[in-house]
Length: 228
Image 1 (cartoon, rainbow, N blue to C red):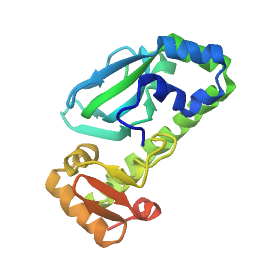
Image 2 (image 1 turned 135 degrees about the vertical axis):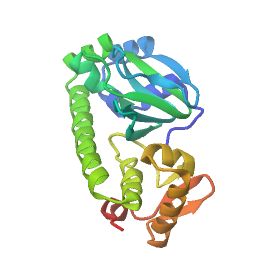
Image 3 (image 1 turned 180 degrees about the vertical axis):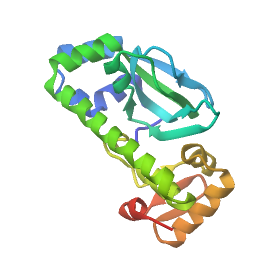
């Protein structure tokens, strides 16, 4: 996972999509992309706002969620260091359809929409990278609808953890992840007590190893298939 001491420039240069850019394009990325700090509980962006930036996590943890008219909060996924989001909102040119909230103190990289669109138009490799992101996110949302309606809490928790290990959406993540049970609860839409019980079930099944403030995934495929 990307180090918390990583600078904005280093994070940009390490991004998978940056490797194929020309020197001129990369210089523009470094000059125009800005950094923003969002404290735990703060909003990286809000539903209904105009989408002005493509956003990447330099360090931290955020969740993408939405609240229904009845007040029910639906969490779509979590995003860790090295992940990027918001490409769909930029392409549609409409307002954002979800909130992005920092679960812990988070540093973000913000690439202006004009630069994002220019790279799409002039870099085939960047275009393909964004297409892959869109495809992976669509698959994740389809799975989310399926397991939210069909699975119990423990199985939903297993799928929530497994979703964090998508190499396209969260590149560079290692089997050992520093995350608290409270943070997992925010992502899974479950109480800390339910998360605690569910993680013990997953540990007894040999899928994860639990330590204070961290989880080691022992069987990722098992998490993806888990059904209580």
